Image (cartoon, rainbow, N blue to C red; front, side):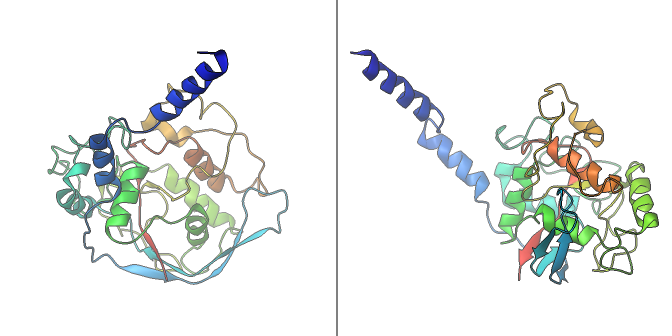
Length: 275
């Protein structure tokens, strides 16, 4: 066989090796990515259309149009996620495929179908990966909110749709990031914001559909020794249109330092839906 022919075979082998090597493996993956349908009585709030001021832009006047959508009023709870796992045993702690969740998946649960001790069942579920959050949303014919949607809703305080220019609002967010163990308490312990949405700050970080869409520079992406439980400290060097908005900077750095299969002690999620 000539060199050109050998090269073609090598390339072909490399391409084939990137795909599942058996029908059985493909079926296992599909079972997790296409979950059984479940039901939730969680309330969703209508988020009216508007514009988000782009955080990462040299042009501070740049705005992103946000279409109206529905958003869970609170993060998904342990009780709600347990119902999903029971309907979809492939997402049980002992059965999940490592490709979709790292070794810390549901780390604090007593067993596959037993919730953690000393934590309210109405507390937000944590130690779930982006893949798991997406599967949960899909089981309800819903989805995860985009980063732009999440940032748009989180710009509101109790009284106004956009409170980002209020110094006291930024200080409130930063102070909430310093509080510990609130992810062990029931959701909806604080006042809702302008849209009727609870617990956007200081309870858990939240997965978004495109969580890593903003590219960052720095060590957080390349350092394989990062402790997933300490990703509050994820750092980055970014060009930002608003250097005063340090709270938002922290969120983008956090998202940029995660991977889709990470399961973190203070990372939860909520669902969204198109109108």
